[in-house]
Length: 533
Image 1 (cartoon, rainbow, N blue to C red):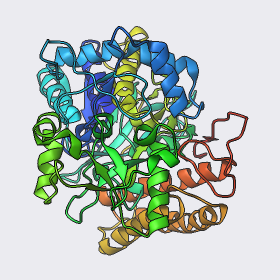
Image 2: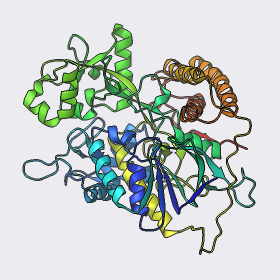
Image 3: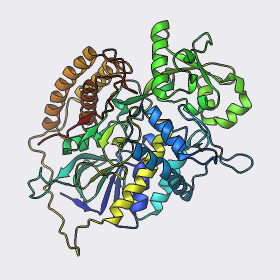
Image 4: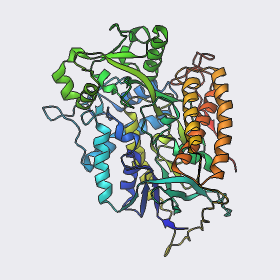
């Protein structure tokens, strides 16, 4: 079996993964893998922007307080302040990569505001901020001394205890599958960094790309890492409702610039749910829309920004305006139909702000990590900020304490046994994979969605346990394929979400249950121990 050695192994090519690779490139050999193309990630789809205090009337303390309030006070205050205060460095990193953030006519930053924010502090590049940032970072990574491998799927992390090595149990790399050739080989490294994004595809309706199957979270859990707060899945309130509009978001910045939520008759309804109206945090807005849809029996609610006029909308939201026009919706004169959709994983692998997990040799950054920034609900545009800041902090930690193996170095690289296929044969029943995939996503939407109950969670737990057993049998019977690996990871994430939801006997932030409708006075994180082997 081929073994590829490196000093730093980065899994994922969103903003967290690419930025960590860029920071580490001058300290040793870096290998970066993406299971698709480099741009196939959630970061590429981000529209709104990146939080960073820049207005002299704004402060880091105000940003931190807004973050804590949005997160229903479950966030870790020290972490929140640290990440907010390092945001300017992250913005500068992007500018150094060539990102041109939008400016006003006088040359100052065109900062915008989104739900839950008390000030304008969102840097943006038009209304396709993520795409512009990803493109700039990809150009920079391709010029850097980084070994980039696209269409490469991580099967499992290599743990010393699992392969029979003595001493402290630690991660020493991973087995990976090259999709074009089907070859399975190992990437061996003393430092593995998971930056794989969230698990939005665990739900039937999501604005996430197909790649968001929770791979890093599942990999870490199978390796024995602690997982935290998976019950907090954020549903973006305003996904475009149209049969051909697959996964298209109407950015929260649209509400930040004056759009209001209305019913099909044009009547505003958010004020009866929250005094902040359409600028309330996402958890409140999503629940309110869901409540109105159930109350009226309508398939969707609407955004109304007609008062801004065509010229303004085409200039401020060119991508959203033209996409809506493709579906016959003119933002300047029509109400925009919207529904909530699964959007962001606030929990994940328990990690510090600089990526330390409960597993030696394994770091986690970005959406797959639970650092304590988001608490029970993510404040709009804090996600890309966290990705940039934690990538920088993680790289600084690893560079300051180098752990190197290989030829000419003090430490000898540990042996990794060849991948064993046993009696596995090529799969001949792909329909089973697609059927189980659809069943997981539908039951999660029906039983573990925006509003939950003990009975619904129990039903979901029972069925997911059965499905995971069926998936395990299928996994060992047939040769691994990318679809099988994603299904396996998706099922793990579904089970973790349900287990965390069952452990939280209160309604807080994104976790709302009819059986415990009040928020507990006690603030407590939900921690699930990793798989024991």
